[in-house]
Length: 116
Image (cartoon, rainbow, N blue to C red; front, side):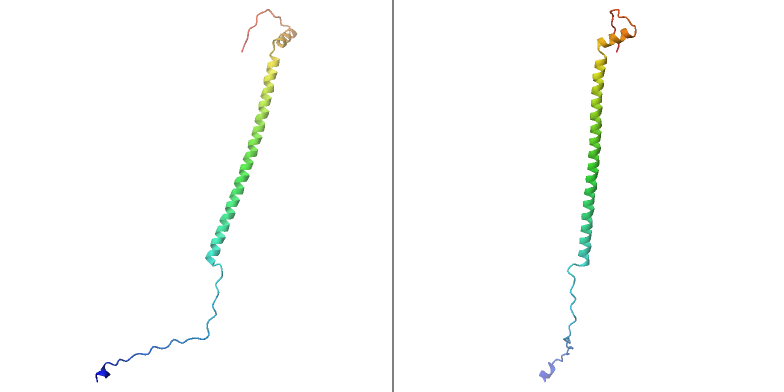
């Protein structure tokens, strides 16, 4: 009797049916949607940086061209000023002034006053 009392009853669990028909396994794409978004944003940022560099280069080239134009006009002005200084030195010679004064009917009395 003691053997009968220690006997336990077990509940049998239902067996998991094994399906011989497996569902087809979906192959995931090589590149996920998140990676596509990352690649696209990286490419867009790269294009924007390239456009920014091109814009800056064109602005630098325009500034350089303007600087060269200004330097050329400065050189012309310096050359013109040098020519004017040469003309002033030629026109202010004593002989020329004396000849011009005689032509206008002025007489030289020997006194010269320098006026600046």
